[in-house]
Image (cartoon, rainbow, N blue to C red; front, side):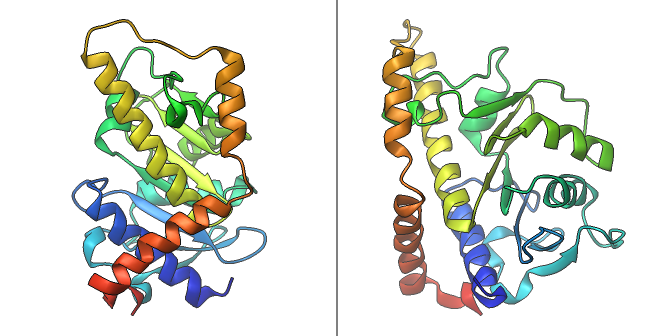
Length: 237
């Protein structure tokens, strides 16, 4: 995919995140690699609201170069480090959405498979329970990269959630569904009743049924972009 299309897709993901109430003020960042080795990547500029971002606003960065003074240190520590160290992290979305963050704040932040959406993430979410403050240095970025390992999702204890994917569509779809799964789980917890957790066998069977090589994710993301095209096409400019 060429850089122009990557810019459009990344801008769309920001506009959609704002609509879905995933954003937090002018914090949090999304990025996508433009080079095969992940060295070069696009990311949103510091302190811009998600709902205003356009394709032309995305900043092209070099993970092997010193960060610029106007780059958010936490964004550089996480995204710059992961693009340099995690080959499968082509697109990285880091957010503090309400339900995933609430789950991340529990003593047990594991995703329990209680329905087909939460079962999608069975044994597929890495857990980081070593929060020690703002992730504003390369050492912390490397620690988070190790915590993610070979998985595509990281539940960041006392912090938020991070998702990676082969492209923007896959990362967006995973973030969409992990936030919905967390919503269902937190609502179930709030009932005060005992959870009816699926067996490992059924949970794994359900998770595998979600794995279609990214076709559903692309269809989902395309449908969401069509909504933007009809209502707010400025994102692509």
